Image (cartoon, rainbow, N blue to C red; front, side):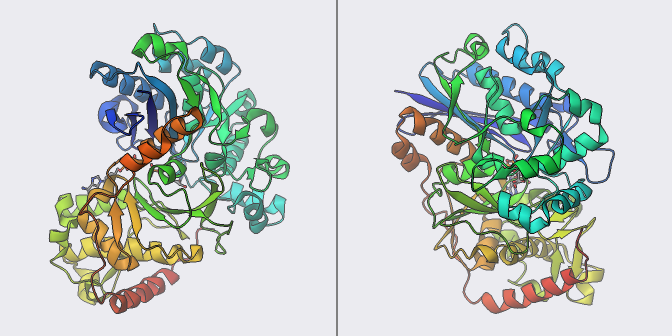
Length: 522
Ligand SMILES: Nc1ncnc2c1ncn2[C@@H]1O[C@H](COP(=O)(O)OP(=O)(O)O)[C@@H](O)[C@H]1O
Ligand SMILES: O=C(CO)[C@@H](O)[C@H](O)COP(=O)(O)O
């Protein structure tokens, strides 16, 4: 039976999933960047730069992770012999800068050496800015000014100029290191970079991930000439073509056949962003369903019946890999903020579980937190530590149990407020990402949103989406795989507790008041 290989290269890990045409999982593997590749000094997948707001990662780390992941699968006995299609997804917005040797080296990958060694000489910017980077406020203003305003950029690209988006990041690189920018002949996203390596040839950028760049015109689905012009010189020549997510890039590079025994006839399908891939992997690519992903970032996304942009300029419109568009709202203080609370209190994740949360009432007696441990992007405010509000006692000497609840309730009240513009009224919200397995977090989302939440059978919705996207254009059994992997786990649904509305209305009001005192980042 044919099988399909899907990759997920997100912030903290690279994982792979091998699935047959009936949806049975044949093999799965994960490489955690911090744990498995400590030589990159990136315990959580990123490194802080020297300038304020800079967050980067070493692109060679992603290549080492790809090699290690396949090596582990192969050593673990994974049977790659029936692989027909391969696809994947990358954390969104991150950019990889390559010099003129890139295509030559790609076409000659030798199985005697590892990928990082062979691609290393082609890298023209040692580290890649990733989605956490907020260092491009100035560049966003410059791009907006050249286009006649931020809302014009939004009208064209689906988002106002956004600090983490690739266009402003490329502009900053062209300004701070014009020589290295001039030596750069190709700029890839994390997704298209990895697709290129697997295919051994320069791969295109799909519309899903391409719309996270402030460069793609959503009406024409081509690079927007004015946006290119406003961003950096000669940019059109440095970008791969934007294509439909179902585009077949070409057969797998011989490197992977020789080294890991994956058939050379296997076709690589264009990679996309991790969130668009997750939309497919959650079975939510048709309008009507809403997904909350609790990865490193928290994201809220849904397929869009018609294009609608955020009047406040915080949310985004991306291409839906199965056609049409999706809305997405991203929160920078997601899992890392929850981890900070956990570390500071010296507790385990059980403190965030239903049992831990039983020590405090819904609404926390009005004691709350703006749970931002670093700059937030939704809303766009500068924070270095969270802000407590409510009773004097809580602000001065907070009870640890209350802090846990205040963090979670604050995160999801903020999410509720920031996603109102989408107008989604789903019957159930689908949860995915590392923190979604935590019942207390799932229950808090159900309570705050007032909507039941479900988890699916597969934990890795990004890689599942990649498997489905590989299967679809290559004649795979999309519906069988989807039915098998994208159904809710029996008994995992959490229902909102009765009568929570007034407590959360009051808390949302206090949250907004406390936040109103903080000025926006730009
Ligand atoms: N039991 C748990 N409760 C809450 N959060 C968890 C739990 N297990 C893992 N996490 C969170 O999941 C995060 C990783 O999620 P993941 O989806 O793998 O991230 P990414 O895809 O961005 O690399 C970690 O940062 C961790 O904080
Ligand atoms: O910036 C965004 C979306 O716009 C992030 O969601 C990144 O795509 C990283 O994803 P995770 O690693 O947190 O899943």
